[in-house]
Image 1 (cartoon, rainbow, N blue to C red):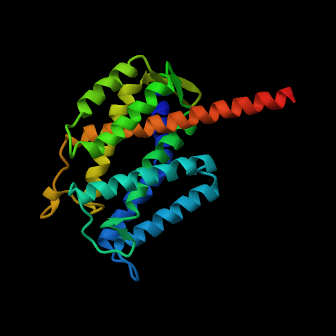
Image 2 (image 1 turned 45 degrees about the horizontal axis):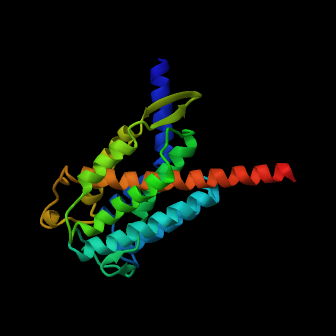
Image 3 (image 1 turned 180 degrees about the vertical axis):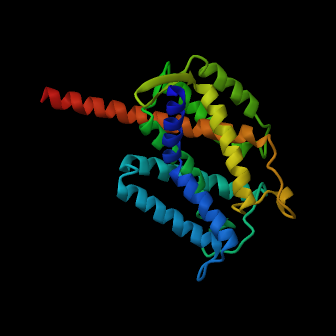
Length: 264
């Protein structure tokens, strides 16, 4: 029964951490089957996401620092969307007032929701990193992974080399988290794989509800190719590295500020 209670508590904390993604999926489902007046579907999605973001900050579910991280991911995701749609990787076939170069502005929130989940889970589960490598290794790796999403259209795809570097750099790194007062540990690379897989599952749900469309889904919906798990895995790694790096910088800044006040 203790194991069951721990699983239930862990699931509840995960569900609370996924609040932003859940609202996005629910909104996609509702707007697909219930036409809303005055604006197009993509425009309503942007309005809902903005309202949700305001509500989370207003209610204290997200902090100002977390909002800054999420805004950064919105820009990173929107930039990637603009490029990928231009290259024909996927498309947004519906009309909307809030589309730029055929990309609806709400699409950035789908990347921001990943950052929201990471920030929320980090805080709720009191995540700590064990044997975390130095920033001079983490930053170039995250940058290379992100750039490969662009450069593989013109050059060779080095995702598997980058995946190998991830295994080498984080081979000894573990993530520690707390569930109902009890701490657990798991290899960090395993957490990357698990999050990447569940995002792939979420991607299938999103494309089913018409969030975006791959070329092979233009006539009828089909399951997203399993190979996309590797893309989401790398994106999760970039997201995690950015969040963890910012939290470490924030932690060092807070420690220096506290030490300075003690000296005064």
